[in-house]
Length: 359
Image (cartoon, rainbow, N blue to C red; front, side):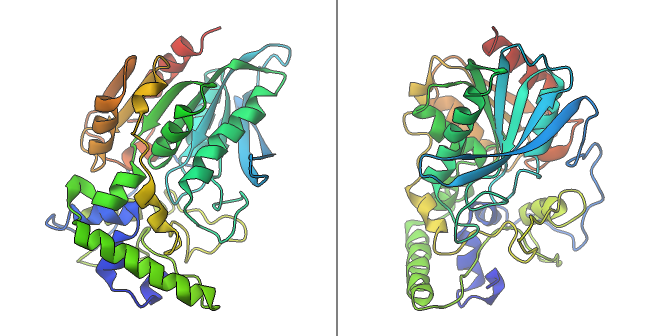
């Protein structure tokens, strides 16, 4: 069941996912009915002749299968032990959206790199599809370290991680209890817990939050009795004169050739949309609690200085212990750092990992 086919009102459904919660903080901004042209430098589906790619799978502790792409420098010395980086995609996306790009660029710099599909998304296992489970998401990063650390060409003491958008909060959650991740970077991070509990700029009230939870709980009865799975939030499928600027920003990536991708077995009608009943799991997700315990492992937070999500990177940086660094990308919005290679500070990421994953 598509989000606009559920019995819940539009405002409630918008509040049931982090991407749409952003809308609540932007209701007063002007909008246009037309999608923007392809931004300068946008290259989500970038491929490199300096990198080889292989599909791989591995098991989590829960014995579910995670699907990933493994990127290797073409000049890799198979007898060497080199550093590796695992990359997580934005919430509601799949590895072919942003994560592949980051992994390719890191492999070009000499790292073994992996982009993964979070459980319940893309080619990874999990049913129902598009379910929200922060614990399973964090576990996928640790399972990726299991895989990478047992490859003969990877130095298991030199594994790092990059989380883009929602995966920034998932990789922090994982790193807090998995010290094998030696260096952690986030880009355009969303704290998916705070985004769902509070919305942007803390614009969601407790009363509204309780209404969201109650609506999801009632839908559980419908599905338990055999009703269709309901989906919510995510990215709108069409633009109107009333489409808010933040939804328009996501639309320009997820619903245009710039970044649209439907995984095998999936449907364009449900891409980006979490299941309605599971999305409230984010209400119990507090990735920044105890973030200081990641120290002395280094953390790098990257955000556009125009990003609607910048509050999350600023808060994570405030709460993290040293060593830490916060980088504002001038002129960049949230989605710009998904794929705009002219804005993404790959040099900064490369330097960060070469320093902190040095042999």
